Length: 238
Image (cartoon, rainbow, N blue to C red; front, side):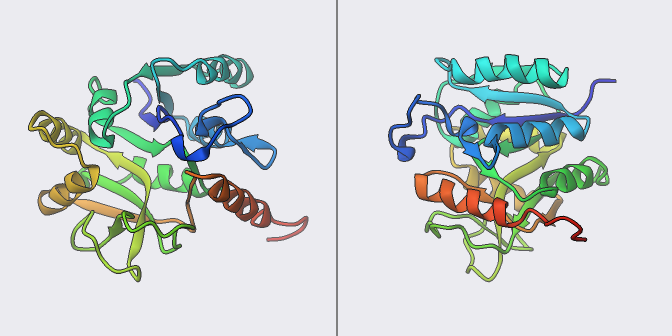
């Protein structure tokens, strides 16, 4: 039996990061003594799930990284070149051959253990749950007005900040994957709009995690690095 898949979306051009020394994608930016990508990929591998990464067609950095990561952990990485585009369109293309998949934004920094906890929960969720969303009550560093907040009655609905925020980590089962393909075929592009529609017709589960840092700018990268460094328990801590 093939292991369930986790698809990381890492094909963005990182235009808001400004010039980096080597032009590397956000997926490979350093966090503590690792990178964003290594932290995500290692947790996925430890959970026994299959790793797929959406990359820019011209990418060379993640291709090199995947070779080194495979040599280190002994697991294969499926790389999926997809041209940049709206989130929903890119995701539908990436999931073209799958009935279900976890989906993770490739610029996310999560506190230790939070991704693994979500994946364990979502993988063993009852089959009647069509979509599982990782949520947090933590405000984003920039509090972007485009941020999607989670309402218990409807995923993707724009609500006040007292509600929990969607983090960019999802588990889509077959019905929602099929809905996404239909949405894109009908020329839908906004993933927020798609989630709102899904919330009206499918069974949704929200799994709260302690935090999530979406890295779009150098300042946000510094905030994420500080947060995960401070969150590391000291020796002897419970």
